[in-house]
Image (cartoon, rainbow, N blue to C red):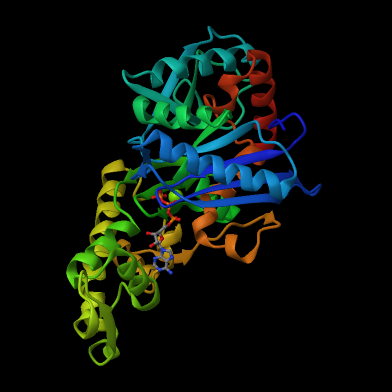
Length: 412
Ligand SMILES: Nc1ncnc2c1ncn2[C@@H]1O[C@H](COP(=O)(O)OP(=O)(O)OP(=O)(O)O)[C@@H](O)[C@H]1O
Ligand SMILES: [Mg+2]
């Protein structure tokens, strides 16, 4: 199989707690249908970054092979997510002189070529460079400058860069599985592409991808990505807090969290008693009765602190205002009872849970918020949002500009 050549798409979400591969085909109506799913407990990944090549390789291999078997297709190229590589986002303006002639395709090409230079930083790699609008002699809000006159043509771009080392480690794991990396997409960006509706991306929305080892953050406005960030705290930290606080094994802490946990207290918590198996104990002493309020008392501060970090990052980004009143929570850890209510309160927004939209063929088990990133990688490949770096870099320059013309047509 080859991504692009026969329209099959293979998306690979390498997460801290799970690795997931979706093989999808176009459904003929502008959407796509998943024909193969492989899903595996993750190993060798910490806070989204590779910490053990052998373990990570075998987890990826197993997930991809399972998806291949179900799809009855061979996967050769994958679109992979990037999480644990210290993402940084910035908006830059790039300008070129046009000396008074009518602006044409060649001028657009020149201004976009400048982008690469702007994004270049030592030890970092540009992951996304999304043009949002053009300027002529400093006047903003021009959607298609071709045919216009002026002295200087500028483009506003949203750049997302990541640390080079963790990205190369991730690529190496994929290559060790004899797969080629067709594209790299920031996880929180992909999760937004899968879960948001058009009105949200137009009017301004914040996406929180609450994973096992990370909480990803992305902001969309005017139809495109404007900001992204990653906080290295996720559901695993909550589980570990519970294990430590209640002196119970991690597997028991995970069970207690998903079955009885909540991010907000309720009046009955004092009365409701939970049986908590104690670490290292056996027999009658092995189980302690603990009020649910104790469990909630461990969970709430951690989640609250994470949301406060999100609020600080948003404020520091300068995008807090355009991020809007709308918040979409996704990722496995967003399923915690009360997570949505607490987020709405701390971030002062209207919150909803985001699940993969517009993707056919997902079984019940893979329709949940934990699969937003994988679904978003498929969405990225289908929607082909114009990205000066992403896919265009890998292809010939001619294809690159042809697509930009189409992108202008489709988006403006
Ligand atoms: N019902 C639930 N209630 C609370 N937490 C849950 C629930 N279901 C799953 N989780 C948590 O979701 C987390 C896993 O989420 P997800 O699968 O999105 O992570 P990941 O993509 O592997 O990690 P990351 O994105 O950080 O690399 C785990 O910490 C798990 O405890
Ligand atoms: Mg994830």
